[in-house]
Length: 224
Ligand code: DC
Image (tube, rainbow, N blue to C red; front, side, top):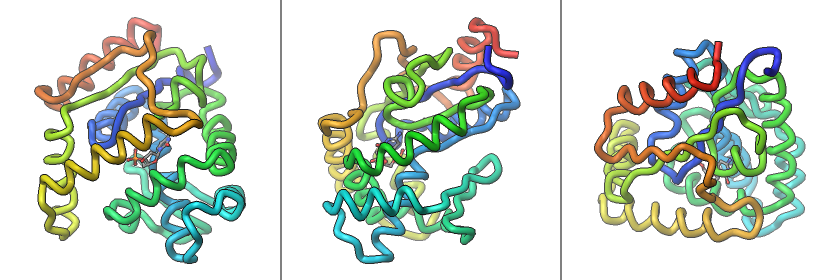
């Protein structure tokens, strides 16, 4: 056992509800929730603001190395170099840029090193695409959270609407499928469903039911 508890890895495609359930599970366990997608989004946002080419692996890697990305609180709120960017990270433009930026090994090396540092002592629920496969292959508990593309698009559309952006669900679904394809087929750390990960299809489940089954799985691994 690590000093602060277990490492709980949650991987899966975008919009499957990983962060909603991850956050709640972390609260319930008294653990820290680490949304690694927010870290890739923060780098993508900075790249867009600085007008960097999204295929410039060297410049993006340098950016990922240098940017001081902080996740604060249980939401979490995201800060880059001391300035809050939480509200800037969920746009469609940043989502697509994050997917491209995250394909560069230079960027991944920088962020994976930080994620390992954040989770080293345990007591974390970490969500992403490669947590159980690359960041913490020795995580005590691994989940793969999935949902149908339509359901994920509908959730995403509601999220965008809540942030004041109207969108067409067919277009959002097409974007989600394109991102799934890119995230699953890239050479470095693609999204993969590990045989040891507990598979949860959230399509027909409430977040509460998902958290319930996750908490039961964690308890059976001996979480405090
Ligand atoms: O989980 P999310 O949708 O916020 O992630 C944004 C992008 O970042 C997603 O397209 C894939 C990438 N990502 C990744 O490659 N590895 C992670 N551990 C988390 C996210």
